Image 1 (cartoon, rainbow, N blue to C red):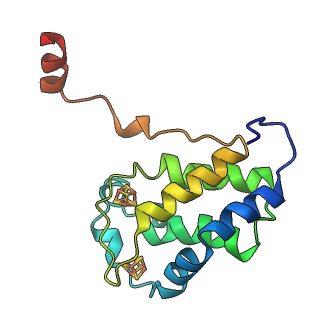
Image 2 (cartoon, rainbow, N blue to C red; image 1 turned 120 degrees about the vertical axis):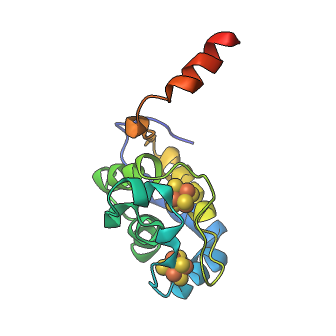
Length: 142
Ligand code: SF4
Ligand code: SF4
């Protein structure tokens, strides 16, 4: 797999990766009823003032949904924006609850893998802040 950030996006590789999970992922994307119930269970959505870009369904639709719609033919800039959604806006904690059983973390993890295949790595949400003092104290005991 290419990991060179300056290489052209390998659309064929992305399409092949998408095809590996096409049935399940397309079914999940189609099943989303946009009910927003999953948002309530996402702590990122709640701590970031319930901004739409932190909503689990939004993160999936604007990343993996776009990849399938465009059959992998996306620019590097688009992949980098997706990288923000699936890394910076999500910690893959697995807590999002979907009313119809869609496995959102699996879809976001799959999108990360596709981004990585093109040398797009994520930035983790370090701006969640410093750990509480009691955690620091525990750390210094070990
Ligand atoms: S896996 Fe991501 S989208 Fe789901 S609850 Fe955790 S941070 Fe939110
Ligand atoms: S709970 Fe499930 S169906 Fe509803 S918006 Fe979230 S992912 Fe879509």
